[in-house]
Image (cartoon, rainbow, N blue to C red):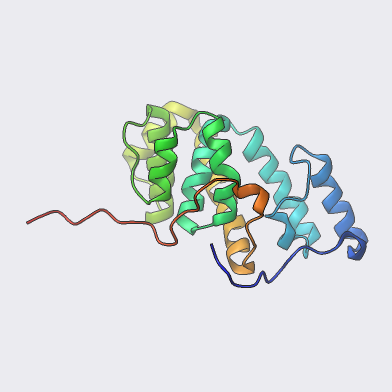
Length: 200
């Protein structure tokens, strides 16, 4: 968590422009049910926010890889960017959708989870390679394509990219983690732990 001041805090609704009001209402009326944290800084650019939130609505709720794997990919992305707001929102959702608590804890600590189901292992390797290496190996690509098809692979890339975008926005804006999102959740360490070097 950061104690630095939020650079783009919530704008009181009575101060919204007409464009901001229309864009915000579309989010409020959608499946999210409110103007949640990632869209607070984006409200300064309502047209960008509208396009972004429509992409996000598809990737979060209707992607070809399904909710459990989408949430897993979101957590991997949040860890890559050390994005506490996304982590606070999505770690409980991922667990509710069936991602093991041990898997979530490992990702928070920057470790590869043990004993992943095949589909979660494929998502973990694909998203991790994409974030860390800025590319995906042939073997990892073939595995993901076999399990999810080309549509699923493209949607997995989309989840990784969209939540990277939101993470960049909130990291730059220093968006506060809403107290209602954290509950009893332990935040991610600021810096992922690294495996100990092998003994010589």
